[in-house]
Length: 240
Length: 240
Image (cartoon, rainbow over all chains, first blue to last red; front, side, top):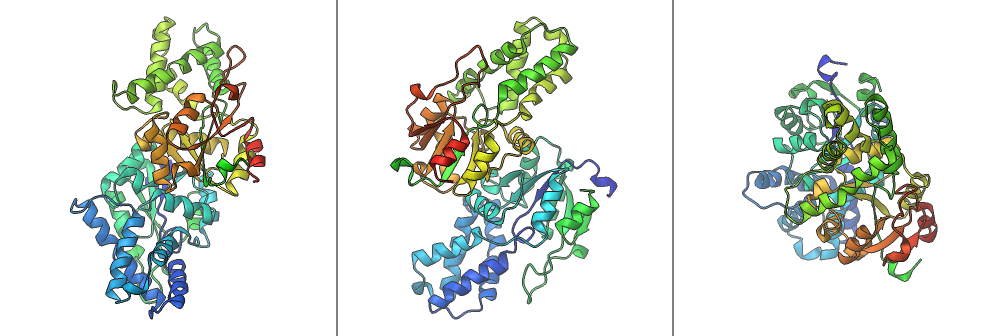
């Protein structure tokens, strides 16, 4: 174990991309709904373009340019916008749009996630720390049977990662110092935010996260305390 | 199952007294610390007097007379006050006081709790809904291996039960209507607050909660949708 991790008491684990495979699950739902409507689209590309609207939406809220909304609301706004961009807005009724937004509530974990988290829990308090809303995270964690000790949602914190306040609020609520938390995430922007807030960082490479046509974030481009390729590898390194 | 419960999707379960036996566990810690100091006291009675300061402290915050503090802070203030009342303030240093406050973080569940919650989770989303702080609840739930899907703390809601807003915030965060939540609690004041907020209510009798010298809240004195004597009985009735 790197010396910088000796003080760690809490693992704060990102969800979308890090723990669950959002792209495969959402694309499957898009494909199912597209088959019922006249949406001619690559489900993977549609899902990518939907997700592309995520970070700009967070920025607009974090900068104060827009009021707070939870992730379900942001997913819905981005979907409405995307369907209009495809010129198929009239073909998707309210029920279909709600169904698509709920695709984000039921996603499969990466194969190492349940085993890795179970092992990490033996030694650490393991909390989800996600920009997902409370209902979304609760559905996702229950459906995938992910063994978390705690669930910290941006919706409770009223603050989205990568704002430093999101990470500091997690430390305050769990009554540990920022450097006693190891943020585990597959995205450089999340690792960077955590590091700026004083947390320790574990970059978890998920090379398939963005599908075959795009390059996922890479450890080589990230400043972090430790880089791993699975939660079970992290458990190995931390002696769990 | 009573017809009024047919719509239930979420169980919101109180923790102290309802799920875990606070009095036995805290009294054991008081006894251990008293044995090391010159505190001549009945551990059970000391614990009762400590807990007696709980509802008045909540009232002072909920009325706006006092600023927000989490339950650890309220436990600490009540302890300081109680030790002064016993005239032994000088005999309890900072470390002993912190240790006593942490007694509330590690308590045994009632014997039916783990099995009952596990069964209820098969059919419902089962959330803790407690006035305990986030760190306290996380320690307690992890230590007792309680299988919750979600953890809603007054510290996140910035609002203590029995204020109606605490129950309504739980419904908002879980995106259900108040009447789709069944509040499960062993205290009449909690059941009353939940009912006023529009939730359904299950009164869970815990006759041993307040020890041998005091009478616990009774179903006969409570207006509720259903009364049970264990979480496994509730699972039976709800067909889980």
